[in-house]
Picture 1: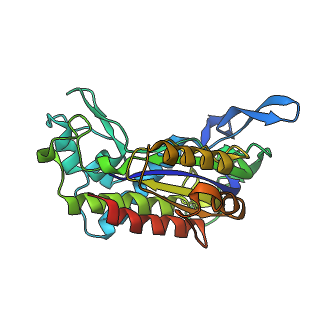
Picture 2: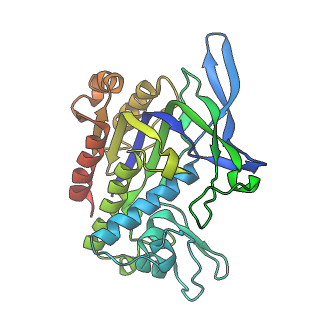
Length: 322
């Protein structure tokens, strides 16, 4: 069995990753109230956030592209076109049939209400939140739509020069990701029935694509309006814990002490026997300093970059998956 838990932080400048729809000609970012600890207790402020749904969608998109580029074709027509309907098929009568026929419905789950079959997502994403120590600032940028006449001249019609404004934000964001990869290729409704499992090699293909898609996602390839506002993204810190036994989630990168608290969680899991087979990859000055001391020092590997942590994780998971 293989389980992954990830927490980290990223610098994101001038993004418009999540929007709530236009009011008139104004497109506002998605915002939510965030509770922070302060020297005087607590405070709540409303700030731009990036939803787990947004991250989940783009992870699925990257999975599709990776699988198709490798020649793997067990992807349903909707997911293959990045629609991610999950799932319109009313003819299947068993969860295992959906799992077998579509890698995305396997990893990202689905609901087919007409036949009362559902599957939870194997990979789970929190919201990306502005970190506890500092606010994220945002403002609106003015754009205009231009219509060209057949002669090539810009139309003089007022509607052809419509001005609109869209909010963009900059800040340091924390994130958290969880995945129980051992269930990929197995029906969650009957996980011990080996007759319903995919072959091991096919499960490995899907697991590897799940991990490699995280690399694409955490390089900043996500969000709304990316054709003109691709996030100016730099992954700065990451903790990746891989275990053969189920383990708790790491503390979300939002919290200023997430590395310290995540270390305590993993140390407690080891001491209690909750996990016996644990490997940790870490990047970033602060989390490296914290996790290379104490009980975790012998199983923690520092890596040159957060992306390298994910690459090393893929290598371990290939060996551990059974």
